[in-house]
Length: 148
Image 1: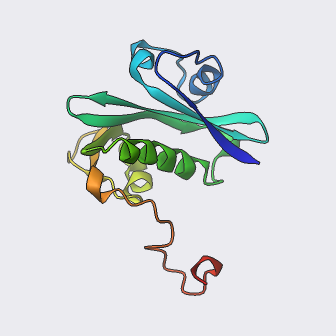
Image 2: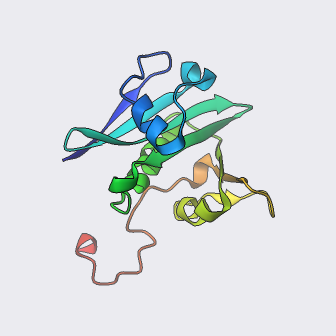
């Protein structure tokens, strides 16, 4: 079973930090005190994490990652959707993130667009009113069972 758990700003992040350490090579930092962190579990094993915080008039996403052995199972997509839902539920005006150039396609699938060109990391953004978490809306599968 796959499920997620939210950690409010200032709460104990001991379940989150080992995943962050394994994926990014670093643990806690000063942003943890002001960030909402989400942890995704598969069969009660923590496998992915991400966080969202408020900065300079926008929600920021960061440290979104899945343990290598659990990748390509759509868990990163779930993490991104959970973070975007959190922003949407707080009436986000816009959501921003910085990511490596080779990951822009992953974030573009849910509507984030590049704001910087030729730079790495790339700054991406989506206006809050453009967040659309409907999985089927842009799906090219005409015979998908979810459309029936």
